[in-house]
Picture 1 (cartoon, rainbow, N blue to C red):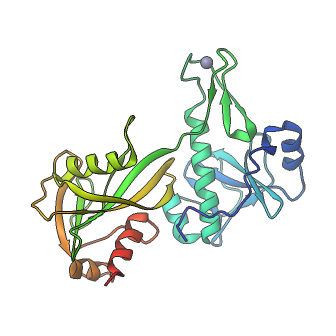
Picture 2 (cartoon, helix red, strand yellow):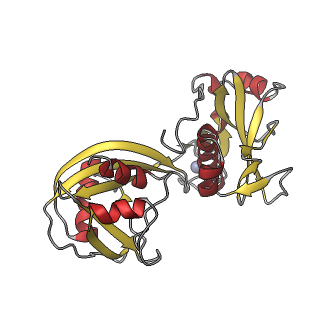
Picture 3 (tube, rainbow, N blue to C red):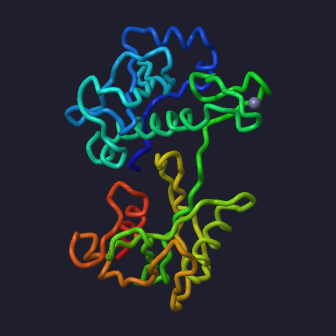
Length: 281
Ligand SMILES: [Zn+2]
């Protein structure tokens, strides 16, 4: 199971466009809303805090026919429990609930950042259960964003893997190379460009592996594996402080929590890609 995915709900994308149907769902006695504050999602006793939805709630979907919404409570005091950042939620909550929190967090973050029309600057209004905003002044339609990020496990085809350390990370922490997809690029183009820019390493083969919603605030991580000739990598931009090949044994040791190398947390796709490589031998 990929963390932040698999909420297991029916998004009811066709029905949610009907305001009457949506209002009936919102006012059902069993309807519930995930609550997000400015500090994160509300959690109590390792489970999501779920309350009846407000009038401003955005619709997430139906879970076993139960309508599920999300509400932003801003800086208000939590009714119960505490606000957990989504990284914390990923480890505290059951995986289906972490996925709901990620979905709610990304959608509500988009609403907070898109209150004004990008076309004419007028205030926009939510539609479609919160899956669209419309500008009454110029009639532009705005949809929730998902920003594609490629992340790539580069190996030499054998026992070495290419890892980088971002300048803002502590000493010893390394991970796979990653970057945003730019306009006009295929995913494979983006993988090749990012690795070349960040390490000077040219890739031979590139293959898609898996994806993960990454709600910080609204990325989609697209995981690839690639093979390259083992040359001497050089950090090519300001993002990485170090980039180098690691031997399988060093990475195995780090995966056990030993040694100087620190890997990404277990809920990340970076770690899944690394662990899958370790499991090959
Ligand atoms: Zn407008």
